[in-house]
Image: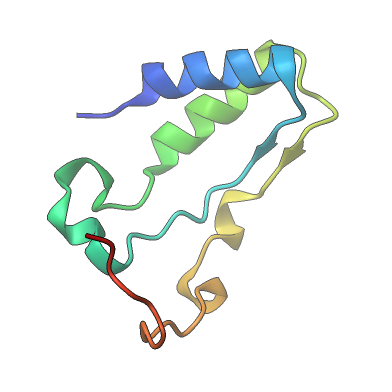
Length: 87
């Protein structure tokens, strides 16, 4: 199930309160696979819906990332060295 409507409510709040940048590069890493809701990339439909919604709010001056710029080449090589788990 998509959290698209919840995301729209967040974007609306952000628009009213702070500057917004919409970026599409979320990539599940580390323990994301343990959480079904965040263990996937955004769909094109979800991202384009958010962009359309943001523009309908008047976010013309916000930074909106091109969808095609989200690729694995931008994900750092993370091996977990030096990371400690919290209790």
